[in-house]
Image 1 (cartoon, rainbow, N blue to C red):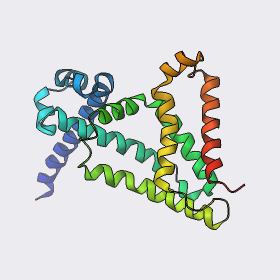
Image 2: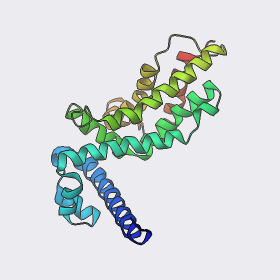
Image 3: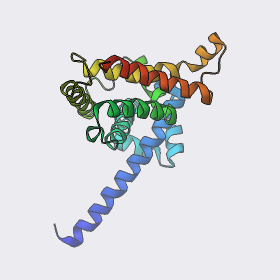
Image 4: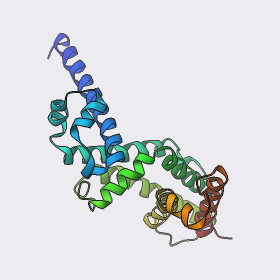
Length: 216
């Protein structure tokens, strides 16, 4: 292929990438608001400002679009986690930063939580066979394993901590609180989303996670 012919091909690929990114952002918002069952391709096309036929061309149907949107949601959070450069920090500092990041990310991206709710409602069938999802999430657990081993070797962390269980605890401490804040606030008569309550929650989560791994 000559240079003159390559330029139009590259431009078409950039246009395709941009269109798919726009569609995935629109799909994310639609699925977050209505869930998989209530989402409509017409509304996704309207949100994206693109022809519905183009969505079907790239993603075939709503089920595959939901899978792609989930994969993109995981790609986004994992990419931001990588920017933390946790392996450059001391183990305890890195763990604290991961807890803080997870809390802040969930706060800033409630659509991520609602998409996970929808995915779990459908028993994760959209990502069970997703090689991309596994490849994106495995490095996080491997990184946590390295941090735990470094902490064990320098005498700051106890041994025998499962990195997967630890991450589930980090994510779960934020996820449950935020996903259920309306019912919890109503039941206990406290505004759990006030600035004071959010600050207290983050401090509590850091204390819980570090208290579990640190050798006192």
